[in-house]
Every structure is written in structure tokens, then in C-alpha cells.
Length: 496
Image (cartoon, rainbow, N blue to C red; front, side, top):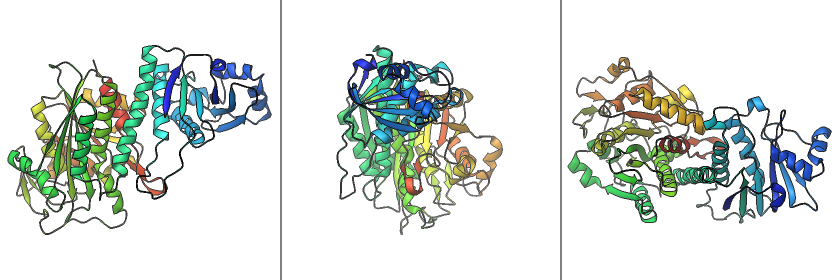
């Protein structure tokens, strides 16, 4: 798809289709006024007759004759007071669902002057262009790699987004949004790939391919022998039951100054999770291919960085393994010595995500990080607590937690903080080791975070439990691409 930015008057821009926004109540955007004037008051007539409605995300298509455009798409953008970024995004998504498989080859999108509610960082034209770009890419996503019949090629080839100017700030905002959408879609591709294809070595090969494609990315992959030599025994323990060997994948982006400490992202990369010896129920187990959602989001974020090249240093570490049951698999009751030297009694092999992450969190100390954020589809308890709207946030640093929350609000990829109090740590007490890997049913997501916190004491750290947000179930089953928008916003807010 060809995307571009234009500051020309809409009447001077030819396209098969023009898209404008129509508020339910309140002042019309300037482009909507200009379109109505060019069409001799047609929009006002249709609105008065009840044929057009500004209800949010309601889309109407109007054929045109003897105009610069063959058709007009009017998108309802709701009431002024209700026009949050989230509601605006719903309107954008509805627009793209109408356009993407429609008859138009070229589209002029004139929605960047539709004002939103909120602070400047959320409601500015740059923020709107960012959101438009991200949604355009995101809504064009399809995953048909494993279908025998491929869909016919879309007619839509060109999208022009109108803005008030053509300066660098506006172009950068749109391009960052487009790159974020592409990063989300890359994340979705990885997550949706079946587990007989997506395994730790396959993920490592993708990391190496990114390094070949982008000079700014450096990739290193540690195999099981290297991890054994280092003492990364918990990652190895999780992978013992699988024929697919585990891998530790390290990608470095160095866009900042040499002396600048890197921001580190750590992704859980369980490419399939049967639960191991603590076998999961069969129903819905196919969705355990999404248990590498944390690593997939790290991949997507690194791709955005490689495309946009911000002035920041970022290191991505992915702990990849497949959790399977066989005669060599780790058992409940086994005690493993971690890279940190602490020992863990494994009471449940289905609590494997924290095991691969704990060694990775110890490993990243070597980078002397500015901050560390780990991302994991870690606990079902998180879904019970927060559902599918927000990721759970835990942190040992209030300022870092606040930064992440603000990034979530700006991007619409929201998080909600849960406690990391010492009161919960005693649930991890073991009679035979330094700790056990589960804390019982009460506060399951909290005790999982408490477990990880024991390996992240030497730096500012946050844990995002994305079990409820990384994928959709049911008819809309598939990876969501979250929390790539959150991570991109957080990192860009700290770029030089």
C-alpha cells in the first residue's frame, strides 16, 4: 500500500474516494465544511433528511458525479464530549473496514482535523496522524499464509492523508503511526503462525533475518550448550521435554549515544505450552501457540525502531522454549538452580513462563540497563482480574510505572497497576529450596510477579502480564499486536 501526506486543499486533490468526518453534534471540521460547500450543501441536506448520521463509527458511502472524487465516505465521529482517542480509533477502524475491500483504488482521508478530547499529547494533530497511520496499517492486516486459496488482490492501492501542513513533525507522526501498525502486524504474523512452524529456532532465525535487513540491529543467539555453560538452568529445564531446543535471543538497537544506558525489553517466548507434566486441559489448548506473545511484541517493537531510527539504545532479550511432556521433561518436585544462584522448587510445570524469564532477567544485568520491562502471557489470573481491556502492570519503581501508564493512555494500549507488596512473597516459601514457582490460587498474577521481582532487584524493572490482551479468542481468534503501541510510545518518549 502506498501511503502519503498532503497539505493541498481537498478540492485540489483527485482520488476515487474522499473520506470526511461528521460529528453527531457540535462544530464540523474544516474539511467537512469545505466538502459540503464543494458539493453545494449536499451533506447538510442529507443530514437534515436523516440519511446521514454522525453517530460514532457509523459509515455511509455516497456516489458522486462530476466531482474530483467518484464517491464520498462519511464517517460518524460522535459527540464532541465523547470523542476520545479510543472512540476515534473505532471510527477509523470502521472506515477502513468499508474501504479496504471496496471498489476505490485511491482514497483521500481527511480526518486529521477532527478534534479529540484530552491533553495535547493525545489530541494534537500529530497524535491524530499517528493514530490514523497506525489504524490504517492495522486494519489492512490479513493472515492467509496457510490457506490453499489466496484472497483476490485488493483494488485499494493508494491512501493520501490530508494534514494542515507538510512539515517534518506531521510527516514523522504519520510515519511513526504507519511503522507502529506494521510492527503490530509483524507481531500478529509471529503469533498466528502455527506451532509446528513457530518454534525457538524459527524465532531465532527471524531475529537474524532482521539483523540482515537492518544495519542498525545486531543479533546474537545462545544455544543450549552456551546457556548450560552460563548456568541458565531454568530455561533449559522448561525445554527438556521438547525435541525443539530452547534459545536465548538477543537483539540490540543502538541509536543513542554510546554512553547512554539501554532500555531493555524481555519477552517470554514459549512457542507452545502444553503445561508439561502438569498437563493443561485439552479444550482451547490450540491457543497456547500465543504463549510467545511477549516475545512477538518485542520483535514488533524492534522492527518499529529499525524503521524509524530514534535516538535511543534498546536491547531485546527473548527467552524461547517449547513446554512439552516426555520422559525427559522436568517434573513437579524438581529443584533447579537459576543463573542468579537462587534455587527454585518446581511445583507446577505449567508455571513455566516465570522460569524462562527469571534467567533472562538475571542475564540482562550485563547491559547496565536504564530500565527493564518484561512482557509475558503469564497468568490466567490476570484475565480474571482485568479481563481483556488492560494489561497488568507491576513495578519496583513508581516513576517507571507512571511512565508506562502514561504511555498506555496516550497510545490507547492501556495498563493497570497491581500490587507488588512484600506481604505476598511468603506464598512462595519452600521447605526445600529458596522459593517455589507457584504461590497457590490466591492472587496468582501477583505472586507470579513477586517471583520475577526476586531476579530484578538490581535495576528499575516493570512486568507486564499480557495474558488478557495479546490475543482474541472465539470467532475473532488471532493475535492482537499488543502491547507494541504501548512499548513504542514509551521508548519514543525517552528517545533523544
